[in-house]
Image (cartoon, rainbow, N blue to C red; front, side, top):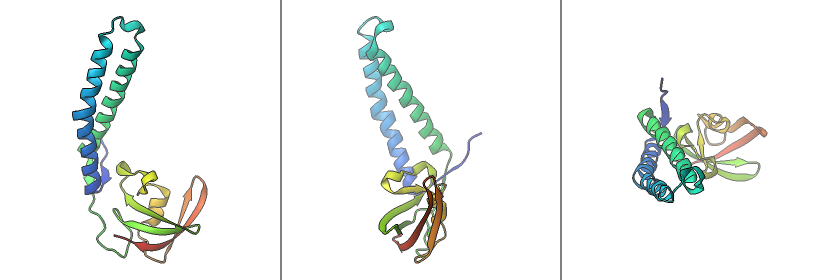
Length: 154
């Protein structure tokens, strides 16, 4: 049974673009690498062939994941109320005296290193529904984290 995955419209477009790149660019490259490695003879002792087949297996698994994600995507419109943090909102918070910028997104499109945090993460859940001036408290693996909402960008 497939589960619906919440994503923003923009996030779904990014996922579709990455899927297209995997299918149209990376898959043919790996198929060519497998064929090249196969042409070198004995497959039992051919490290290049084993590596190419491993890469092919990993790519096919990733393509399957992205196809499932696109098939089960539930587009959630971004928050249009600029006074309240919701899905798709970009916010600036004071985190221990340092300004951090986060965009709250669906789990499938989160990239914490890029400031795109999931609504399912402790920080994402803590930010939801907050307004400028509010304090959001999240229980993270590092312990209790408090953030003061400084600005809602969109």
